[in-house]
Amino acid sequence: MSQPRRTIYLDHAATTPMHPDALAAMQPYFSEFYGNPSSIHGVGRRASVALAGARRTIAELLHAKPSEVIFTGCGTEGDNAALRGIALAHREATGAKRIITSAIEHHAVLTTAEDLRDHFGFDLTILPVNSAGVVPIEEVVTALGDGKDVAVVSVMYANNEIGAIQPIGEIGERCRALGVPFHTDAVQAAGKLPLNVAELPVDALSTSAHKFYGPKGAGFLYLRSGTPFQPFMTGGSHESNRRAGTENVPLIVGMAKAFEIVERERPQENARLRVLRDQLIGSILENVDGARLTGSATQRLDSHASFVISGVEAEGVLIALDLAGVAASSGSACTSGAQRPSHVLEALGVPARDAVGGLRLTLGHSNTPEDVAYVLQKLPQIVAQIKGAAPVML
Image (tube, rainbow, N blue to C red; front, side, top):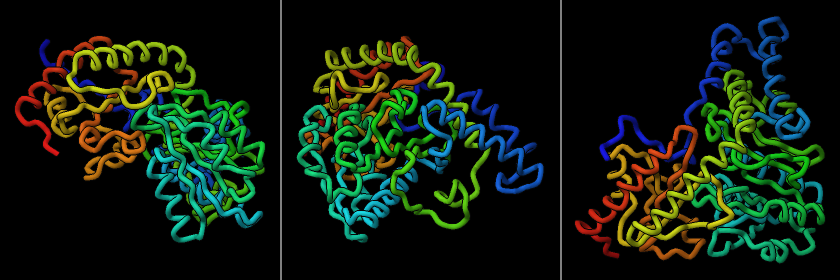
């Protein structure tokens, strides 16, 4: 099979291409409708109307109130705002000073929790995961206790590196019963899993538009009415005094359009990608020497396949795939280039010598059965060549 004429993009967990309809929706707000939505004149009012429309669209898709949607610049900002804002406000109201999170969170959550511990006097409880990368509910129950000293719990909806879906429904119910605020990082879940907050027992939920075919530089934070919250970005009265800074109207309009599209297409697209994902997993486990699945075989995103391959380093595999016309990754794009093994693989108990061989293949709209067939032809050859030329020595 010859090299494809286009790059086969299998790194949708890192970012997604803009949907053409989202891009088209944004265009007028860069030029024709350029006003500041806080201005009272006609030019500003047109921008304000667009902002309100985007907020209403997102709220309807979430089954939330428009007032519960806060526009942010990215998922990292949403995670920071939720953790800091809820923890500080809940401590002020009740004296609770403990944060509970999991060992496999994105660094946007883990580093923020550590900062609140190290510089703001909070205590921190890190929940372990099982070998499938899922937080056991009994660990949550034990960590919560009576909940009186817990300022906030934050557990992600789906993991970016291994695709494992967490039991946030059960965790949220436990938190709600004890009156403990619960946040979930839904950056990887948006567009792939249901985000109906009328059914999900979450008090805060953060997303990033570029993970669901929207623009980079936009995200939203859902904050349930009545949830204690202190804004961590201060200045003007934007976003009902919860996030200072002039709203980026074009990007927010594009985000709302992209979210509308992925939610409409989600059931059919998930079913299509699940077939391709299962082909990747089955064939790689059978035909790639030393390959082992990371994360749950069942509780995982339909678009996500992840492995460790013993005896190789990820960098060599990724370079060879890139030269063959395939874009893939070894894990989180936010930590690429890091020298230490992935904290997620460490939490799963993957030995360091195997963790260096992490491989993540994440599917999206552009991928076809022919793409998967090409990758399944090339990857075993690449791994065999690398192992024959330069085995890992640790």
